[in-house]
Amino acid sequence: SEIYTSMQTGVLDAASTSSASFVTFRIHEHTTCLTAPGEFGLWFMYEPVLISQRTWQGLDAEQQAALLAAGQAAEDYFFEQAQLLDEELERVFSEAGVEIVHMNREQVEAWRAIAQETSYAVFAEEVEGGADLIAKALAVE
Image 1 (cartoon, one colour):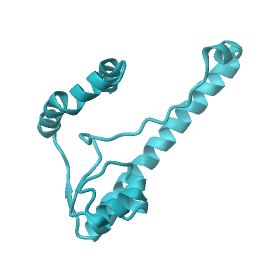
Image 2 (cartoon, rainbow, N blue to C red):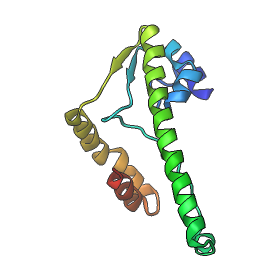
Image 3 (cartoon, rainbow, N blue to C red):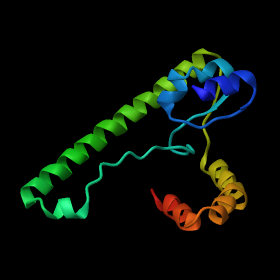
Image 4 (cartoon, rainbow, N blue to C red):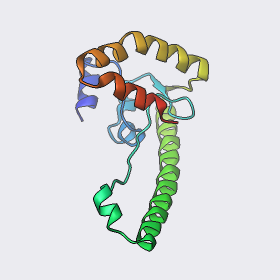
């Protein structure tokens, strides 16, 4: 991966990606510290199943209920799998001697305060609708 090569050559000294990618890219070979995902992690991937209103309205109540049930089953399964990937990430990095850090609420709030003054501000200024996108992202629980 480009992350691996960039860390190997010193072009990057940090990266953010999914737990599975951190493991499969073997990033533990070129880092000394991992900020672990979890309750106060900085990264979480939402991978929704989407359907257009037009298609949804074309379904009968039974089909809609079946789709909602399948979506809930998929969400439950993938959340469980994501937790297993997070555990695997910590195991692999720990076995490689990488320091594992778990952020607490205070640390996340401090990080977010800095981000609001830096990266959030730049994104809001340079991306059309950027401020609204940031607000929506921060509203997700």
